[in-house]
Figure 1 (cartoon, rainbow, N blue to C red):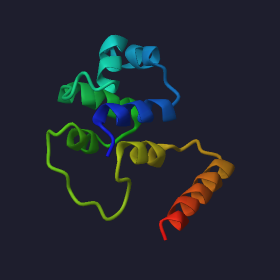
Figure 2 (cartoon, rainbow, N blue to C red):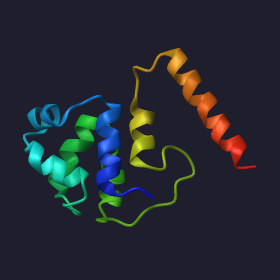
Figure 3 (cartoon, rainbow, N blue to C red):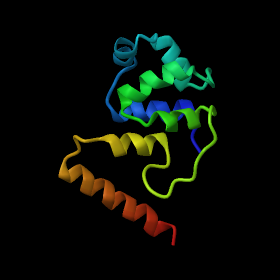
Length: 113
């Protein structure tokens, strides 16, 4: 399982934001963001997580779970990680991108058999 920092980096990269862009949008220094993504900061404040949640289009509760503030709930549907939540929130994917992602998922699942 990826750390909170790794998952936040993936979410940022999937949204195609630089650390500077996130700093501008959230008023949180890019140095702090970098430390968080590199796991030097393990438990950012809930207020900060709220800002990232809004910017990245992620479920706030999922971020709070990933940071260890609340206990995980079993999920039967929907994304199971922050990266999955970021992909789930993408509303600008082209049909080709969606098909490519589905093909890749099918490929990964076929290797498990």
